[in-house]
Image (tube, rainbow, N blue to C red; front, side, top):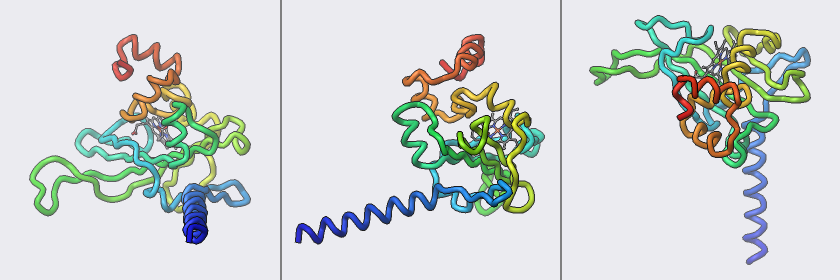
Length: 199
Ligand code: HEC
């Protein structure tokens, strides 16, 4: 009996690990193009921005703000909780959606509507010489990494609070990074000069 229970437990664990790897694995074509991750909504949700205006995907007028939702792969999220750092193979997905206020019983405020685009950011030290690569899926579900000197790479490496990523906008992760002392010197310097978020 005991052996049977152990056997079942082993199978369940193996299946869980397989499912997890399948959910997290990325698919690259032989020319290096990445296929848009289909099941990114099974990843860990970090936070949402509304009408943030910093780059191409969010060029929204104040009258027509867009939402963005940020997801990260569970294995890297668990590692970040322990170390405050992103391990190799960390993958972020930023989903952009339109905002609307008219529908059903809603009388005020805004909620999320149509999917407008996906942006992906991957840390893969073997595949990319600059470690992190950025992908913008505008039309179609396959795309090549943006060049290492793209606006994505530059803005993220100069302004991201932890290793090219905008942890300063994800409240639960910011607390961890502060405790683990992994915020970049550039971010700490800017925020002590009046940037606010690192208090
Ligand atoms: C001018 C600065 C800037 C540029 C350029 C920029 N981003 Fe970002 N990005 C941000 C900020 C700020 C956030 C975090 C806030 C949010 O949107 O929720 C972010 C978040 C992200 C995230 C979520 C993970 C993270 O790093 O926090 C992804 C994925 C992402 N951007 C991809 C891209 C891609 C792909 C491009 C280029 C097509 C790009 N970004 C260009 C500023 C920028």
